[in-house]
Image (cartoon, rainbow, N blue to C red; front, side):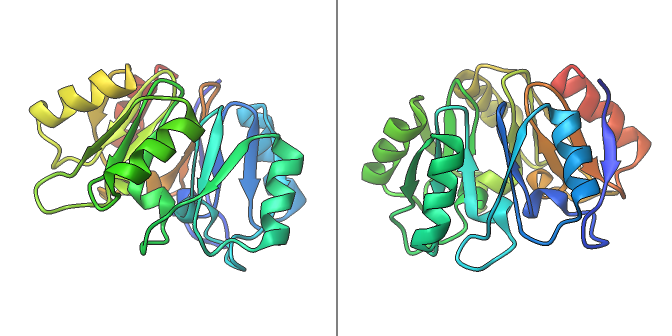
Length: 221
């Protein structure tokens, strides 16, 4: 147990490139086997290597819990087959003009918060695939709710701008405690700098000690 500081492609924004749940890591092609082994060993998961629409930005283009995965409509057929074959998860393309599913959806196995940019009808579809209640919301004029929240089944962290009223809503939906913090020395879009599941956490290499304390407390690691 314990948080590991990490980078990929000499970049601390590790959450942009990877997506994980309690069973699988989805990683982009070209990451060294030693780095993949370090991540999968820490999270105790199996690795699935694929691009999404030819892109390495797996974390930005997907949202996932233990029940299903929402992916960008940019995904190619062969990429979809890799994910469904190797994970067995139900998969759905995000029916939206917006392609960054990971920036629009924050989910765990208890609930999901989705951006109000996503239609009510699509929110219902997301609920069916992830098998959890879904709440549409935004914070002030900020709509990238998936980038602003990172959740597991044991806790969650959130952008510092999210106030107590919104934190209560998030707690009620995700059924875990939520704490305001940043990652990578002040980055408020917390999902960009973290790979997490119920087992463990990896954070970007630029994350400060004070941020590590908040993240550790939030997730109970």
